[in-house]
Image (cartoon, rainbow, N blue to C red; front, side, top):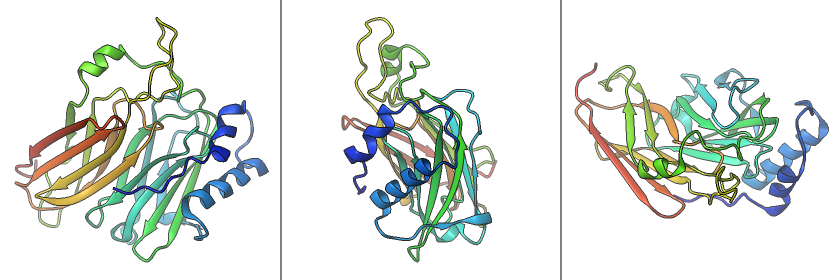
Length: 270
């Protein structure tokens, strides 16, 4: 899976160096920051407001900056035409948190994940369509310290569980003319490289899921390219269409090229 390099030093360094906190969402500096990020990610392509076609859900004040839930829903008209979703957390050290590409039409109709937020920030979602349009929605999130926050549990125990996967089908398996929500969770510490071991006081190396591929009945459903902004134990929700009885397969690869696989046969509509 190809991913355009984003992390130019001129963009990443200011986010690390600045003490943010109380700066409002609509300041000129934040607008300038988003202009720079758009140029770095999309070049000169225009980015338009999505309006009601894209509903972005993020808590305005996060309870935990290391586990901020993000959800988006596309309108029925737009969903089959969206080929990719780009998630950008403007003030994070590495702003492009994830790019999610659809392998089947409508797979991104409802997308969920959890992210780290390092400072009060605008969070942007950009939907890319099959006719090359870029449609944007944004929310302001009050949270800080998520990229360097301590892990939720013991690091060595998390490494022992690394690669275990869980599949959730809240509405059962797909069926003819019946697309359903699916959630895949991967046990992985997903360390950012900015965290400190609370016992040794040494930095914890970055270990994170960098790509994830989902297929159903041998056909592609979803591909994710992700970075350190995705929270511990990465979780992705999406929409699945197809006949029941197929095998859902997940392949995840981390930044150390370790491969983790899971597979489930989806029987019945539940």
